[in-house]
Length: 115
Image 1 (cartoon, rainbow, N blue to C red):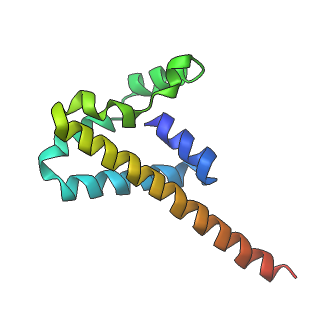
Image 2 (cartoon, rainbow, N blue to C red):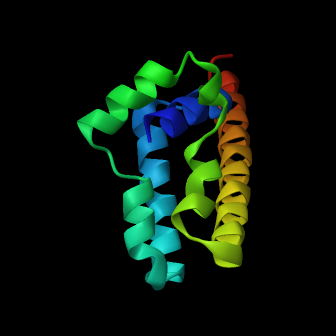
């Protein structure tokens, strides 16, 4: 999960806390819309110390290019896994777009106050 938080902070320009809350919101949304996937979603986004250490250790390696989004179809077999993986990737991209728009609007709003 740390890899996803890092990616959101870099691409969307938000804090780690905001990224974490965003991921939790998306996780809850997916679990609400697809209750049969609740266990798989919890496993994918598990934040054990060992998982965080492993993510940090591999972040500089070539394997860092693959993300949790690329592993969904490994957890959920078959076409369902591929569809959930595609949905999650699209949701992540849309979240990045939303955060970029919010960031731009906030920047515009606050730069207008500093005249």
